[in-house]
Length: 360
Image (cartoon, rainbow, N blue to C red):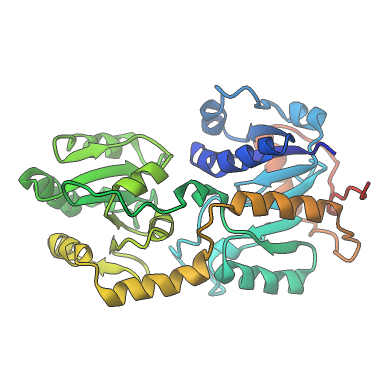
């Protein structure tokens, strides 16, 4: 049969998550549409021919499967609701109950397509406890274009990619000492810098970093990070989830004031230590690379570029699977109201059992 998919996003940074999924769906001659519940996301997909602009458009479309790169999805869309995640677990902060926010349940999803063992284990435990959703480990669609890794790329000058999160207390982009040190290093010419900032950062912060543009510093205004990952030899970051994406290449990452002291990162707390940390990273310490490999086995053990295929396979399988053993989703009245208010669409309809298509 011809399945109908909806890729559901909020912001432009989710587009690279959806594009590999769209490619896989179209390769099978299925139908796919896009929908964003935020203006910035709507503007970012406005040039695509297969977008839906309103809630009514989605209801008329009647998708079978919604692939969601957001924390929530309307409960009044009658489809299989699949969480594909908008990032890795960046471990920015523990939640009050000592589990990470990455594993917080909102009560909207029928299927979680997890990225690797360290997310699968947690969601399997939650599934066993709450019994209203399925879990299938697939890998993450966003990183499919990263593979196969190309070891033949050689930079004329050591190249460092700078990436930053948007949370002010965690973001290196706000730090004046870091800015001045990078300015100095880009001026002396020992390194080549490429930089991208989170789209939620204030414009004045972005414009400040753009002033460093020159022979040894290039600012990129993009959410398509994988081409930049491939260009860089190492990364300099704070707690952004781009760290995990970059590490998939087995390349070192220097972090500034990371919340946790992981043995697969070179973490510093003083801007005066930046240059020495870069030199250490470029030396490719054997122990560091071993620690990175061990971490990636738990984070995302897939290097075949076929995670999107596994997501689509899992979604179709669960769509047809007998799910009568699953409980109804939580009542969730406040979250459901907030979703209706956000979309300016108020209805009493709510689908609390997972959508199922019978096998033909």
